[in-house]
Image 1 (tube, rainbow, N blue to C red):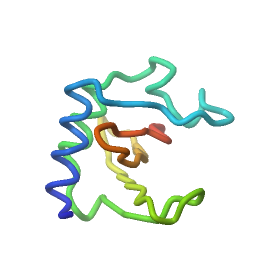
Image 2: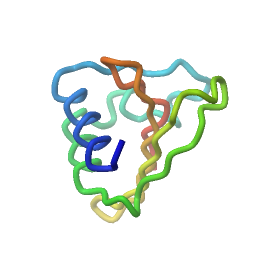
Image 3: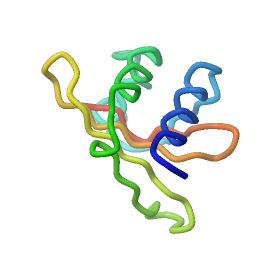
Image 4: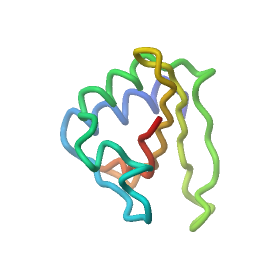
Length: 98
C-alpha cells in the first residue's frame, strides 16, 4: 500500500469513527487523543499534512504480521508522534503525543 493510500485510509477511519485506542500503561502521556487533549479532527489534519518522508512502517512487536504506521510531524511548532495500525475496518491508535 502506498503512503497516499495509507493516509487516505486512516483519515477515512477518523472521519467515520472507525477508531480504537490500544490499552497501555501511561496512556495519559502516550495517547493525548484518548484523554481528550486533542480531537480526531486535529489528528486527521496532522496526518493530512504529513508527507512520505514523515512516515515509517515497522512490524508490531506483539504480532510481526501487523504493520504499525508511525508519522512524525510538526504542528503549531510542536513535534507530534502518531502511531497506529489497521484492523479492518478500524484504525487502532497506539500513541498520539508530543
